[in-house]
Length: 257
Image 1 (cartoon, rainbow, N blue to C red):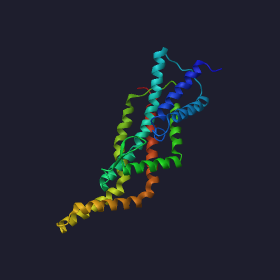
Image 2: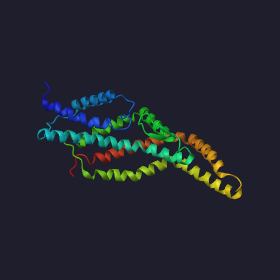
Image 3: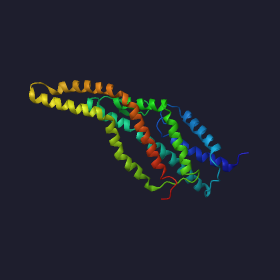
Image 4: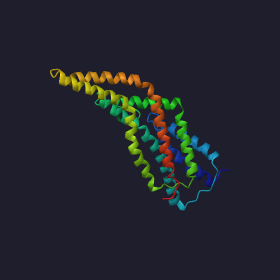
């Protein structure tokens, strides 16, 4: 017979995993039915319930239990959010790329996030998402979540206020990684702009604005076609950053402030 304490133990596991499922990339897709997300969170919680060593959860009344559940939910939300902002690097890289080749005004509504995204940003996002599914990278995200129960056992999760330093450190890497992804396009566009500037001096009667629009578009698409084989490397770069940021965030969970 299952006691009330064991049910509380299971619910605390469930709220942490649910917070992660509803914010982490791949799992938080809006076109995935909510019942699938809830079922996934419930199944993972049941597995962990039968795997983790049981320890009675200590709290002081209803208020203590509420604070405990909120803390566990925040742990899952923080870990999932950290992984998600790493994934958003692709959208930012796509915006930089489209600004260079002339697609910055061609925005579309992403049915997954219901946000306006650029064409190239959407392309990179879906390409890396496909790589995530093929290489079972989402399993590694689940492993990272499970490891959080080692750092912060069930019912003992505390969030160090200094966790903001993880986001501050990542902010600089955010722009660097996005620029590294679009560096081939950026370099080719710099060369095209240099050629157009020389032509404008040599033949001022030619309209460099009209020529530049088509030339940048053609060169940009050709370079994208050439460097498309680098997408696995881009995926590995994003995945490694996800695990690194989640590991850094987990180091501030369960430690004293």
